[in-house]
Image (tube, rainbow over all chains, first blue to last red; front, side):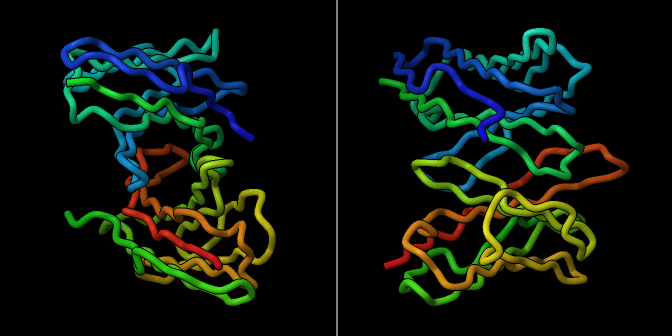
Length: 112
Length: 115
């Protein structure tokens, strides 16, 4: 079953604009992670945010976590054509013992 | 550090055959997880190994199995292949210690096509 659900399913914006993707989940988590996947290739880890953290930054990426609402958001600022990819949130419930549970992903298209 | 490597990258098999996929984790990572990705079901957890022991398994039939060697390399096997087993199989390694999970590093995947 899908623990995380991303919203929107697809997003198309102009280069230079900001992109925001949201993720909702159902059960308590140890941490939540965001990954990027280009054209059916392997996943690239972006950010891990633990349950006791509220916000993390990495370059042009900003992730927030609201455990009371069981939701997270990924913000990509000043988007570039190379950011075109699918973005997945993944939740870790039991310290990795059950693996990560992924959402269906948001497909982001950056128009030049 | 070299990344996670998976072999082979592409495979075409016939229904009823079996297949073995290999994964070499990042040096120092003792946790190896396997995932199946299909357009319909998305990314689904298959199993996870740590120090040669399977710690947990996802909701897949017994035709899916795996193992981990003392050097942390892992293999997964699918027996009696079905058309629905066509998927991208991803391996991921991570550093794990004392119940604390760290980020997972994924390999490029093995694209399996069953005809």
